[in-house]
Length: 255
Image 1 (cartoon, rainbow, N blue to C red):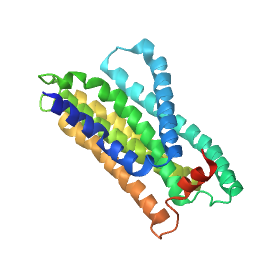
Image 2 (cartoon, rainbow, N blue to C red):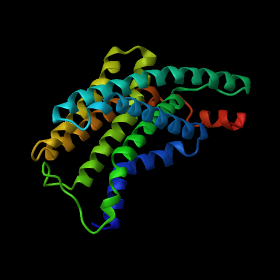
Image 3 (tube, helix red, strand yellow):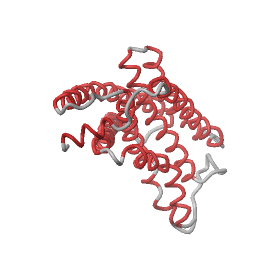
C-alpha cells in the first residue's frame, strides 16, 4: 500500500463530511462552533463508556455485546441532553434576532443546526475509530485479519466509519424533528437504528463476516438518510424558509 491508498481510505471515511462542511457549515461561524461542540459531546460519551468498561477489557468476545449496548445507550442519552441544550441556544438566538430586528430561526436553519450537530458526532467517530488506524496504511504493505481475508482492515474501517458518519449526521436530523414534534416512532427509530448498526459490526468478527457486515452497516446509514431526507423535504419542499437567515443573524450580531 502507498500514500495514495492511505489518502483514499481517509477520503472514504471523511469525504462526505468534508463536502457537507464546505457546502453547508463553513460559511456560518455558529455552525462551525456547533460541529466542534457536538464532537466534544460525543467524546465525553466515549470517555464515560471507556471508564465504565475499563475493568473488563481486554476480555472474551462476548463482552463486546453488552459493551456496544452500553455505548449506544450512553450516546443516545447524550443526544437527548444535547437536544435540551440546543433548545436553550435556540431561544437565545431567537431573542437575539428579535433584538436586532431580524427573522427568527426558520425550519431550514434548524435543519442546518441539526446537520452540524450530527456531523460533529460523525466526524469524531470517524477520526477516533478510523483515522487513528490509518498510519500503517501509508506504508508499503497492507494488513488483513484472520476473520476477513477478503478486505484489508483499513478498508473495513473506512467503510464502517463512513456508515457511522452518515448515520450520526442524519440521525440528529431525525432526532431533532422527533423531539420537537413528540413523534414516538422517530424517537425510537434513532436509537434502534444506532443499536442495529453497532451490533452489525460484530458480524465482522465471524470468518468472512466483513463481506456481509460492512454492507449491512452501510445499509443502516442509507435507511437513516432516506428517513432524514423525507423529513427535510416535508419541512422545506414547499419553499418556505430562508437559507441565509442564520447567517444574517450572526452578521448583524457580530458573533
